[in-house]
Image (cartoon, rainbow, N blue to C red; front, side, top):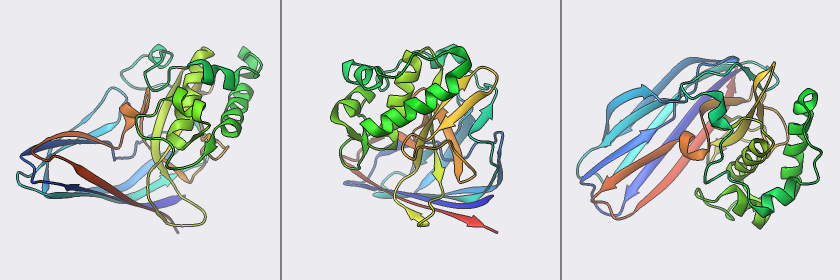
Length: 269
């Protein structure tokens, strides 16, 4: 499947910026089942500083905001070709060892509410890990209703489990925390999803991957109850959202900033 993607991010600063750097993870990965046909990034009131691969093999673009700018626009566009591998990515790659995806982070660390959410699941066995992870995904989706406006970027898995509401980021963090609790390496994925009912979207998507012996990394979209298919485009991965966030940065001279995002994903013939 060929997917045309356009992703526009706008920052409006309350006062002109003296100096700012933005770290962008907005370039899709070249991985099994995914090929970048073309990809372009354009900046208004900003300039490219450098580009590098981080510890998770994410392409990171560092941009500097022009001094005195009150608004910055970053536009990404391109075409990605995907295949259906039933969510299987395959062998582990990256500078981080596999065991690093067993350790909990502040965003994934289980507390009593998360533990109670998955307590009724049978203990995973070596020959049925895939079944366990699908059951875990279903349990989280049933126990934590998808609802926007209830959580924020910094909401932890435990907080989302306690509230019973969340979005795809929260579902992924809960899944990752529970999988690691069961001794299964797991990681966070940010990317794009082609929706069947619309082209225009207000945000990127997020899901999780778990590592299973013999298969490697396998994806689980908890919010939609499926493993990723050709409608999904992987952009960045990490131990939690912070490692894979599309945009992070610091600024001096701008007291506040308002961020707006427009995403369009459409199949091409």
